[in-house]
Length: 314
Image (tube, rainbow, N blue to C red):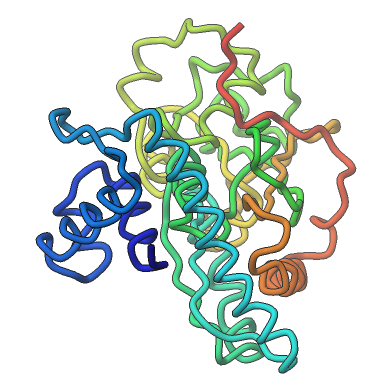
């Protein structure tokens, strides 16, 4: 039994497909399949049910794969111990970031992080929260940046900052002349929303105490990014909510249409999330420190009402 065989085993479990697993491991499918088969022969058990599409682990296969993940993780831990002994951080670090954070946060910290830790190759993927969680559990990511709390078993959360929601309201809107707005003035039927799957959408819905009663207009005008929502809003299709950091990046003209929400300000908690307290923890700690240094100081303390990013199923 070799570490390479265990890595191939994990890859097949992650992708549930031998060809895609081989591609992810940068080997040919016959090579990967042969090594998995040799491992099965050595153990005397069938690890995958190849009659199923996608392939599935057998009952004993699931237990062995779980142990294989622990073994492979511990080999990675050896590398970390060596790095710590040399007092240096290096290697690949895979980070997933949700779309509603990526554009406003990544440019703030990447250059500084690279300057401080030039030997760390930061590989960033823009993914939705569910994808980040899945990839963390399959060890395809080292950490993620997402809106929390998520209440996911085995997922650790390390808060980074607390970002208020801001209202983007065109001048002709019923609230266009207000200097600020209150929670009670928010009407879900009048708010342009992100598509299903975005945690920011869930938070907006939760702010409005929405219960599956969206108007026809709100459904038709859903979009996948803030720029589209702002453009539609300026054309008279309603108002929208944007995160504080995104509002800072708007043009001077558009910033005149941004209004704060009165206390208690609805706020989202943004955290680093990961699955293990030990593996690559030094990199996670340094990334956490650099990101916090990159955002306005007033966002660092939790002093408002954190809105859940989870769908309201009530």
